[in-house]
Length: 73
View 1 (cartoon, rainbow, N blue to C red):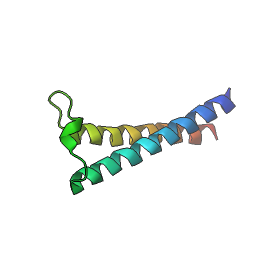
View 2: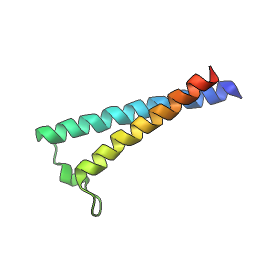
View 3: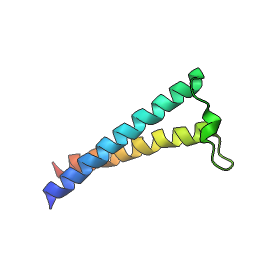
């Protein structure tokens, strides 16, 4: 059971790292004017909030994944 949980937690951590990198890159490109952030607007949320939410979700997934890895090892 712990080997499966360890693999899943490593996958969660890696997905979190990728989401964090994509979100931060999106914020940097949007701030530089390379991409139009309003294209990512959903409802009343501005595009910068949506892109920032991707980065925050990635940070949370990374923290959960690495926390479980540390607990299991």
